[in-house]
Image (cartoon, rainbow, N blue to C red):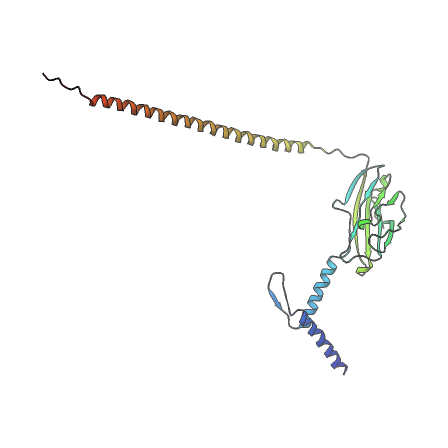
Length: 255
């Protein structure tokens, strides 16, 4: 009886899968016909699970994951989180690893976010650090006041989302502390810009000269045509008069 019940259950599941989809297509467009509806259901479920996990929790420190700052200045370390299905009790923390320390990173601050946009309380363990994200627009950034050379290193923004079965992600931000900002040598840039500008100016001058030359030549050619027409008219007139004089003979007088 138990075997029959299990068989009936499997038939019901397979029937539902058969109604859902009987065949799937590869990306290349070739049709793949599966042996049984149960196999089809398994493939569809796997594809959906892969698409869900591909858009999971992500921590981001922006497009430029590093900053070079002068000793004694105040810097902002950006970090935001995102999740396609939302968050619930998201745990995040900032950790710091000094450039001269190859050991375990030390905790800077941490907290738990019940939901997006909710004001939170952050436990800060590093001095001169202020939490400025306030969880607005998924922002969990921090501010470090009066940085020193000891503050230089890698900062890890970590997040874990229980709503996604504790899926976690870490973004790394590199802080470089210097005595003074380096002056960038712009000689090569100026040379390239000058060469490009000179080439454009030469091309424009050449085109203007070409157009002016064509205009002058067209005017000269037009004038020559007018002169030819005028001279042709004069020649025709003179030839006509001469012909009429030559053709007319004086009438002989009768004696």
